[in-house]
Image (cartoon, rainbow, N blue to C red; front, side, top):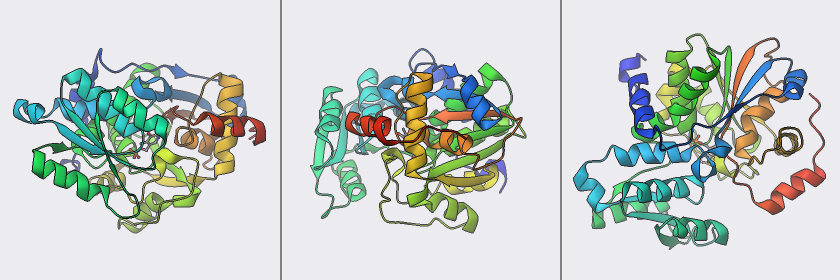
Length: 329
Ligand SMILES: *Cc1c(COP(=O)(O)O)cnc(C)c1O
């Protein structure tokens, strides 16, 4: 697969970075002596838990809406998500003066429904057992002339997510390794393209929950593997399959995909709170958990670790603080 056949290239990420300048937060890169001691490596945490809406999703959403024609912006956009993409889309659309409709499951947490409405989105509820949200979104797209913007399988979304790693490398220089959490693979594919261009030779590793290793199986087999909704506290990575645009990018630029357990995630969430004074959600802790548990040997290396988001239910957060064992490495 040559670079020219991929859906996104580094110039798309560069253009996205210009659109996001002064709009998205340039999130901090944090280090921790204790994390370095445990991993035996030099770690640079890129903290998207401090991004607008508390996760990197704002980047892809804002870039994708910005790229629409004026006529399409006047008609509006639609997205289906119960998580961070919904809030990213709602805020980005409001900032760009575009009407946004979000299709959410009727059993989504009340807090998430309220937050999405507060950003000014029209929320359409559906029954998770009876209906398919992709079908509903596609129908709304047709009936109302809305542009459908999915959470990961979209070139402008992937390009927006890639700006995370462009910023990281601009700040700390080239890396030996880069670890990125993986759900549908939008963040991983954007990150991998950015790393290939701005830090050639960097080994890019995706990390997903053990309960749903579909991305790992997809990359290793070359076919998109579909699974049931995995039972994991990493709800941001509870996807059932990676994207069609994503797979060829992973094949071209990602070295491997590894997994971590929910117990490792709980311990990592506690480490972030206790040692680094920050709140990180389950999916946000995936990449760090792989490095700190030495799932891949990175001793002596310079390693980028993406912390993707911080939107965790406070009851779950409290449970992680109370029950998880400290990370020892
Ligand atoms: C969406 C999300 C992910 C997964 O991103 P993909 O682009 O679907 O792979 C990981 N972490 C958080 C916090 C997310 O919101």
